[in-house]
Image (cartoon, rainbow, N blue to C red; front, side, top):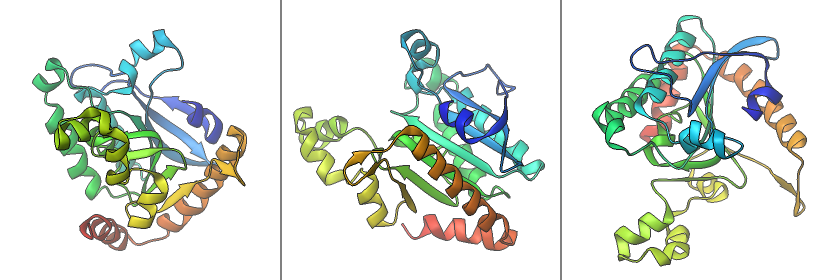
Length: 241
């Protein structure tokens, strides 16, 4: 929500997936960027304990992903670019979430985003955990803040599965290549948004200013592409893996 407020103008939040309920771990709506309408969707963890509990610590239920998909299909109908902000340890793994089709909801998002007929930029601003993050990250470009991570699961979980020893998480993290710089070198993401300059942390205002300028420039570039070219580039981006 902080990024929504600082980067965009006239943000109007939408609620509900029109199927079950309104998952408050996923937030989204319509806003203006450089006086042009865009659809923005993000995962909100919360700023304090009561909000953490209300937002389920940023772990969405299936209805959260279905709300995101509803907003993306609406964006497609009205020709609005989609920008997603991702910060989650992963989708909620409770019994109710599984009963309501968590896996299907994530898979449906991947299927629909793969040929959504508008530009998509995904930005990982904290944790990018497993399918819970990937369900909002199938974009034309994926960016990461310098100190964010993007991984198939936590290093602790990785170490527990591979070596039956969760205490080897540091070793697992080295092996997994989960940092922004490592993923940029591997070609998994396109851009690292700096959070430091010459070893000193940048202010949030400076990070937001840079991010806003980058978004405006990149969306102009993506919007100028013909639709078949845009979709083919998105397909090839993931196909190369």
